[in-house]
Structure formats: C-alpha cells, structure tokens
Length: 483
Image (tube, rainbow, N blue to C red):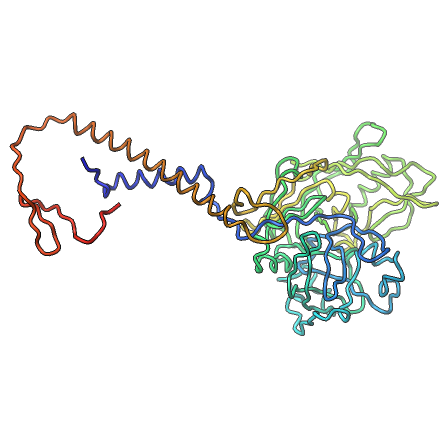
C-alpha cells in the first residue's frame, strides 16, 4: 500500500520528530558563533626594555607599536590610554626612566605624535556623552582618535582604527589604563563589528578576560544577576547590596561581625582599593588591634608599624547569597603598614561612593551577557590551572579552538550540520516505518466484502493520466512525486 504523505497527522509527526532530534543535538536551537571566543590573559607585562612589570592585558598601539598593559574596568566604555607628556619627565621618556609612576600605576602610556597611523577625531564622537561613558563630564578636554591596536597574546591580532581616548594635559582620575567594558563598550563593539569575537558579552576572572565567553573552570558556585541600569547613582555600573561584613583574624580566632547594616558598593575591576563605610574601618581597627594613622588617602591607608599587623580576612556577604573572603596582605616600609583602604576619588569613583576593588575582584568571577543585558557575579575558583571555555549566546562547533584568530573551521561547521541532518533523517525514517506498520495493521484488521476486480488501461488526456474507472485521482506529468 502507499502512505498518504499529505496527511496532516503525518506532517505534525514528522515535524515533532525533527525538532526532537535537533533539540538533543543542540545544534539548531543555538545560533552558531560567527567568530571564536577570544581569551586574553591578565598577566605581568613589561611595557618597555628594563621597565617595571605591571599587571594587565598586553596590547600595543600605533605604528611603530607602543606597548601598554590595560586593565578591565566598568567605570567607562571607552579605552583610556595615558599620554606621555613633556611636563612629566618620568613618563615622557620611559627608556631613560625605567621605574616611573606611569609604568607602575598606569601600565605604560601612548604618545600619539610618535605614531604614523594615529588619526584625531575632531568631533570626539565616542566621548562626551552619557551613552558612551559613565564619567563623560570629565572627558571634555580629552582627545578622541583612532589607531591600530594589537592583541599581543593572540598572535598579534590587529584591529584597524580602534577608537581611543587620550587625555591632553593630565592622566585623569584613573589609577591604571582602563579597558572600558561597561555595557556600551567601544572595545567590544569594535571587535564584534570586525567579526573577531562572537558577541559583546564577556567573562572576567582573576587571570583573564574571555570575550564572547566565560571560563567555567574559573567559576566557583552560581551567578547572582541583575539587569543593566538597575542603579545609575554616581555612575556605578554594577552596584551590589552588602548585607554583612565580618573579620576573621589570621591566628584562627573567632569571626567577628564588623558591619551594622546593609550598604551598597560598586563592584569595580578597574579600582585598586576597598572603599568602605568608616564605621566598618573603625570596627576592623578595634577587632584587629591595628593602629590606623590619622592620615586619609584616596586609595590606601597607613597603619603604624609598631602595633598589630593589619592582616586577616574580611568576609563579605553579597545580597544574602554569596560570601566572598578577601585576604588582607599589607605592604610596609620603615614606618607604616599599607592596606588598600581608601576614601574614594582618584582611581575609584567619587568620594563617598563605596567600592569593592582589586582585593575583592581577585576572589570573584564577573559576567556580562549582552543579549540578556545583565551583569552577574559568582565566586572565583582561584586554584584552576586549566580552561573550560563556553560561548555566551551561541554554539561553538566541537573542534573549534582558541587559536587566536577569528572564524571557525569550515569542516567543523559542515560536520556538525551534516550530523544533525543525518540524525534527523534517521529518526524521521524510523518514525515513518512505525506509522506505516501501524496503518497496515489497522487496514488488515478490517472486514471488507469481496468485489470483482476489473482492470482497464489508463487513458492519457492532455497532461493528465486518468483512470478508466472514473476515479478522480491523477498525477501531473513531468513533475516529481511530492515527498
């Protein structure tokens, strides 16, 4: 017998079978990434011969290349590069002044006049407006331009005409050279537009920035998420509610609560300090026995050397769900211990804005999902020595690797597609066979009275083949049977 292929029931069955198979294959329901995810390590970088090492992402700008180490930041969307200026001899000529503040604090610098590929943007289109930079009012006298940017840890991958911001006469309010990663990031937008990364989403852990992806091996626990723009107070991109702060002495003594209520702090990878309510600092001093100097500084605090060492662990409870333990490791000179407790301002947000900077960032993993427009935070697996890269919002073919160039292996994409089609076809054929068996069984069980069979030859009329018994069933010539 023949199977009625135009049956609505069969069509629904076939569609369900195909969708079922493709869902299990995980291929069609997620878009194939248009480019490889890109992993940029955060490491100690020497930006010139004999220079001091600085922690950041190794990049070079201009022609010939000028080397810098930029650090991810949520303070801005632009890529900020300090300028070498003649009034600051320590930063203008790095080769003769290897141990300079601009090397140690800013990760190098850039002199646009020394680059043959620099182009000034007279309209400053990617600065000076809230849509691009959270701290836009401070950029009014800075210069916007374009130059070649190279990712030195990714086979020197080049991005032509990367938008950059260079201050005219000062280094600005930042304690390093920030690579802006806020939700309107110029950097990620340029990479996505050039099909170098699959999306503007990213994951950031203590050891690296994953563009278009997260590193599952660096994550410990589940994410706490919140939508972009939840709070715009004082230009904070990622505000989190801190419901408790406790102090754990280094000698293993009992944990002591040092906070009295909930407060909101900006989670900021570009800041170098912890900016906390003064009541918490005072409670820490009392619990630890350390002796805080009366001096206050924007990004650090001094403790007298002759008293207890200001160390131990601060345990932050975030939104009532996530606990983050921050180890205090003070440095010292002949007179003072130094801890990254600041009052805000330079290198952070405005004075009075609480910030969870570098010591806290070392213990967490951050994620930005551009499609969902959410920021997320989880604990970091600081002991990880491998990578488990997962793309955000798209499907990576099985044999794609992070080799440092964009695009996928055509064989990987074709192989995945062919596998999906073959699997769907196989399931469809199996489903048709079972349906046919069922229909055959039903027909065989019916009691049909015998009828004398009379055969007549078919007659060709025009383009139609008519059965001589007057049946209305026919097929059109020169066309394929419907599948």
